[in-house]
Amino acid sequence: MGFGLSHLRLENYRNYEHLDLELAPGFNVFYGRNAQGKTNLLESIALLSTTRILRGKKDHEVVRSGAEFAFVEGELLDGAHISISVPLSGRKRAALNRNHLPRAADLLGRLPSVCITTEDLAFVRGEPADRRLALDLALSALYPSYLRDLTIYKRAVEQRNALLKERDYMPSAAEMEPWEIEIAQHGSSLRNARLQYLKDLQPIAAAAHEEIGRNEHLSMNYAPCDASTSAEELLRALEGARRADLARGGTSVGPHRDDVVLLIDGKEVRLFGSQGQQRTTLIAYQIGSMEVASNVLGDPPILLLDDMLSDLDATRRKLLSEAVSRRASQALLTCTELEAVGDAIGKVAVAFEVEAGKLVRRN
Image: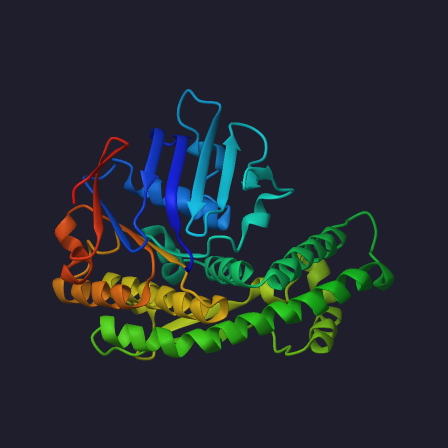
């Protein structure tokens, strides 16, 4: 049956006061003028998938003006129901089959997705933290053990940093060691998982980019901030960095400082890539993410593609549409004009016109 949504319900979500939407199992296209609610729609589905709000905003900002909470519920293709409620204040709550879950993060893996928006260009243009976040989100959705390692690792780094920032006394080695052992154990697992993920993804992304980017060669190289390849080596690196870390008040080694270097024909895309090259790099990475996820999960995740066609020339737009139509199972795409999706998708897609938070099916 695969992953996907058969029905989406929104209450007081951004500019949607109420929405009951039946989705096609294949391609769904939402088109219309800007600022009508197309991105909001995709964002609500991404929230169900990742439990995170797109665009780096605060949770409560999705609550419609005048309302006390926002609510998103999706019926999966297998009949299960997943939902998230976001109050104006306090923590968001998640439910599976209308039974509350202990944490919103417990929804991860129920609706795997690959989301491509203009905001995701931070993966190409932004800081190392943006690229680490992309890897962490993708791997956490695929592997519960990765999310556990990441949670423990972050806590251990926070505790070590708190000791490093002490100015009233000098922390002893005995105080530092328990946190450094946790950082080393879980940090090496994170780094190895990221390395393997990029190893699996690289050839797929390179092939997709050559197709979309007119035979330009894309490479993605993991760039660790230190030379550690095992927990033992990372532990020694942490011990060796203590003096310098005390002076700077922060932990200088470990996967929380690693990066991914993106190159087209040997030149760093972040510095030298055109806007078109930066977009095709992001799309190629996400196509690679989609195929890796498909291999791990046994079915492709759903694809959310938000207004990524407008700035591409006609040839690249056609190539992207064809690449997406071959790889995606259920896909939800937004654009300003229906014709932008191309014939490969347009002929098989269900199309909705979006205006002021209202949807009208047009075919």
